[in-house]
Amino acid sequence: MSRHSPGKDTLAGVDGSVLFYPCSGNDLEVPIRIFSPHVTEFWFVDRGYFTPGHQDTKAYGFDRPADEVVPVLGNDADYQLIRTEIEGPAQWSLRNRDIEPCILTEIYRHLPSGRTVKIKRRRGYGFSAFRNDIRQIGVFFYRGDSPGEGGSGNLWLKPDHIDEICAKLIDGGLLVTDGSQQSARTKSSPKAEYYPLAQYHGTRPRPKDPEEIVRVTKPFTDTKGRTFTCVGYAGERYGPTLIWQVHGLSK
Image 1 (cartoon, rainbow, N blue to C red):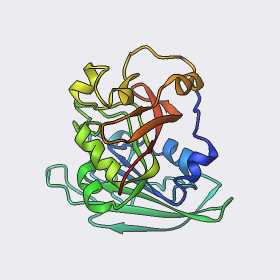
Image 2: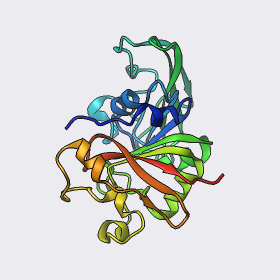
Image 3: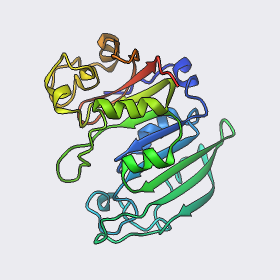
């Protein structure tokens, strides 16, 4: 299945904003490809970054110390690496569960547009990063997570956490998810308020064509008056990853 990306008007609405992706692992390419250079700052957060031997990241080399990892866009001809910055200890011991954050920032120039784009990888926990490091976002990206070994166990799609996300999301901002880690009630009941975000999660029936999925997925309004409208598709993880535009966010 190919991607069915949001339209130009939708992307213009998040122009110059921040994308936040907790429990991101090595899933960096698709968010950057879809949203750059409209989004000019990307935050990828994972507890396994820059922690040698960590089970969550060692398979693809993101467990290496921050000063040894390969630049994310180093082989992309559209991007020129300007400089890197490291804040915090470049590596962390597996034995120490009290993680001290490290932020590796790669600053690029997007050559076709001349824009500066920052790619940040942060070692640590998603909720901690979101609450302490992030003021406002244009895109919240979250997929491929689970409660078992290798998963975070964090219920980002639980109603009170959706409230947290919406409190920092710009009006007309985007929530991108495959429905991972929905709360037990959302998962089991089509009448649950945020069930639509997880309606195709796992093996649930859905259309085969991405354009058809986007077309038939109905918008919904929650009890806070926020309207969620499906405007695009970003590939498959634990089901189709849908791009929802959110309106009615009061600040």
